[in-house]
Image 1 (cartoon, rainbow, N blue to C red):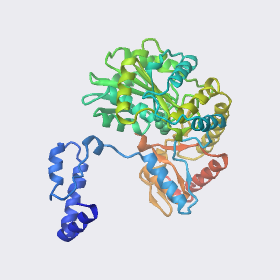
Image 2 (cartoon, rainbow, N blue to C red):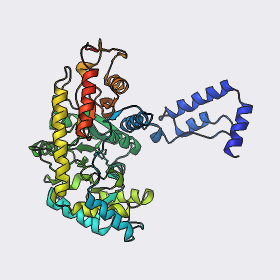
Image 3 (cartoon, protein in one colour):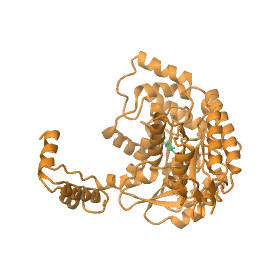
Length: 459
Ligand SMILES: Cc1ncc(COP(=O)(O)O)c(C=O)c1O
């Protein structure tokens, strides 16, 4: 029956109260992933004509991305005419460097517009191998590289290929929002290990050791980190590797997408370069952040053949290879020079200046605790001194937690930030400084004003 006809029939036949009751049943079913799939479906289907809205329990259990929701909300507010400053998104504000854009345009003109091989073009996989060797001290053959539609897909395929029901995935918090959800999608259990500002938001070998069980299958490391900007030293990674070595089943997914956005004296070190770790590590990287290529959707995974082949199998049956045009552009990106050459160095210098500015301004606000970010383009202040019992904002009300603080700052200061609860550290919030100097100055002026003692009572 056509949808319109179906709706009309339903509107006549069913009273409003029955409809509300049924909607309740649908919502309950969607929120109860543990109910057996068929049992839930039976509860949802009260008439033959009704559409069964039951979802795969793993999908029903997924939580939507708070960063995306907040970015969308800020954009909507802006479009409705409000002077909102969005510091919630995780993307560089720079344009893609001209050399890369030109290569993308040439790719279209020269007919690179057909399907790419599933794991990416041979030329780009070779160029990625050369980059990994020169910059990261990692030896891979092109068949061990899988190019995907963004590093997000690389991470998801890495998790899904290696983890399943009964497996535990160690996810240090603060984490990138998608890691725990990808584990759930795989049917595995994310085991969150919290790290604090006082610990520099870094997982220690001792904490890892205390968390591992026989079911531990994967450890996800992100350095430089989104959202904290923390960077693991070579020594810290070696200590973690010693623990990993003692658990033969344990693999590591090293997300290195921010490797080029790192500030002296911090240095990037690839986990797979530690002796004995290459065989257990899935290294993920991509072009989005360093080369300001978020919209081009290109990332990659480098892993021992067995795991690379498994992720390629998922890709082959879902999306196929990434954009041929983006891959031609990425060849130009890798041709810019070591560590991205001059264009990346220029963006990095701008990010570093902004990091220093934002850090300095935030450190002057009473109640804010900071760990100095060493990389990426985020500051992740601990705001527990600004929220909780007795904290009240004039014209808004009590500020129970960092979620409420972000709501207040969006409503009153019209600055969009992301609460730490999105990243597993509810006492913090994330500020992206991938914005112009004037934008950051204005945003911090507004935040400072909204948190001034005359209008904001600390508990
Ligand atoms: C830590 C981390 N990993 C992976 C990604 C995914 O990047 P891409 O745009 O290449 O999918 C992001 C993007 O926000 C990220 O922050």
